[in-house]
Image (cartoon, rainbow, N blue to C red):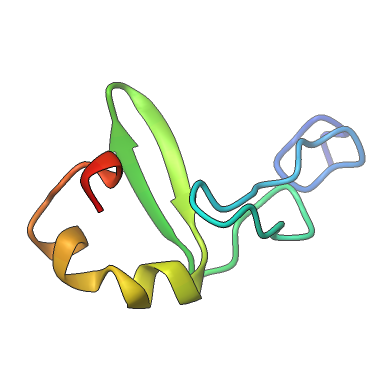
Amino acid sequence: MDPKGPDGPGATPVTCALCGTSAGGGSPPATWLCSVENGRRRYFCEACARTHIRAVEGRLDSGLW
């Protein structure tokens, strides 16, 4: 296993771009949403994704939510 891989000890924890909730590991849970905005990956926890599902499906940038 790569120590700097997505789940290795040197991995950066993934946090929700809206509320700051931490995923607790290097990889986001399967229930989290990933959005690419301006070339950057942004992750949103399940609660934030559910709250803003219409904006997500409408492909609005998260800054407009």
